[in-house]
Length: 323
Length: 289
Image 1 (cartoon, rainbow over the protein chains, first blue to last red):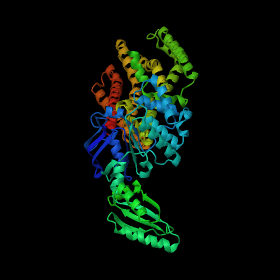
Image 2: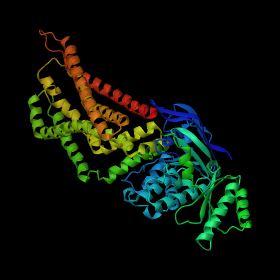
Image 3: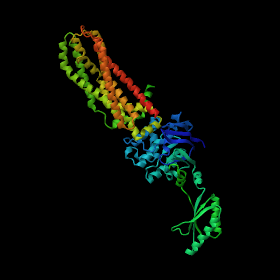
Image 4: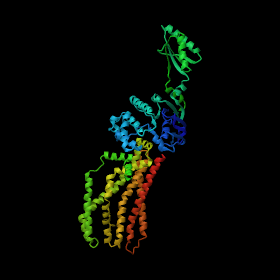
């Protein structure tokens, strides 16, 4: 896969404040790259440099092979940008808004009408074609903005917090749209401060914190990074309380002896017969553990891994840096 | 080729956007506006004809009768309308230009525009064109009134051509046409120079300021300062320059009478150059950011 976004030593300082520091980032073509970080981590600054709105203090960046510093027009042609606010003119009609931006991208008058209709169709706003932009809901405005970013059929979409401030339904709609766009072969570079928001659509994740890239890789890599220690929950069954507690005791002892088990602890509360196991090992080892337990005749009723969601990854990786 | 070029100008997205706004806000004057012009034209033609036929320079009394009969109403109308317009247009323009780019910045759409293929120059010029388009009834009126203004300049006021001839200032009638042209052109250019400069100051402030409110305050303050400076300079220069011609024993030479017009021309020229520089500065500022 070809590299489509690349930054090398990208640095941006505002006076004494360093917003982005020595950022080395590589995004390959066709991926959905989630750019995650808390507010003020430098996400927007990075994106604004990539879309040529901001000049970096040091370093260089390339989009679709064009230098952000020297070939700004080519970069702009390759990028569809959606900032973290609606850039809408309320006093325009929906079609006029799209027509205006299509004209800004030098799309000739003859093809524009057709293009506007197609774009509205894509974001499911065809019915609101002649309404004023102000009359649209937040979710619709966001979709309109997305369609604006698509007007010149860019290779790369740079979306700054596309889901912020939207209700769950609008969020899902945006997500579906992004899936569709990825299927169309677009590279999507999307930022968010809420990881779970974009976790489902991303193929790659980069975590930025205080202007530095803390970690980057595919979704799986990122999960594994944090899940060198996996947490498995095991539920046991017993005829009565005594039987159950004996079974729990046996299993506890058996598990604690295993080398790949770091820690075993009973789960308090209503999961009376449950154990939580911190386990190191890959999927094969985990499967073996289960089959061995069954082979030992333990009354296993439930066995599942707590997939620490990426939120945990995020929290652990960014721990302590801010403070 | 030429039509293609026009097409690109007319298809300029920002200009189109602004024109659409003008149209939507019903800023088009009605038919009555266009009726006004032929009426004025007719009256002025009558005035001119009477001037010519009243044996202009032999019978000053005749001129006055003619002027009184047809001229005065026309002169009054033209005077009032042109002076109002030449006052109003330059002072309204900065309110429009000062808000135009700053407003985009407030809305967050300036970044969107800059992220497109539009160049900074294109954005600034489009915005300027859009603002002038909003003022178009006044602009058109001022253009159309130009010939009447010339007549008015020629025929009235203490420095008017007729009074000069009549007070027998030694004014050579062959030079009079040069003088007439100079005064007329200077008088006509003045509001355009003002308009250009004020609009450009507003535009520059708009490119500079974060909020449109600040841009308005900055541009009007700057314009006030510039106006006072220009006025003072003009007064000082005109009095100093005139002094060298003054010889109290002699009648006033005709040259002195040309000084205000020449200065006014010079100021209009300075204003236009300043306006061009400011527009360029606005483009430069946007590029730099």
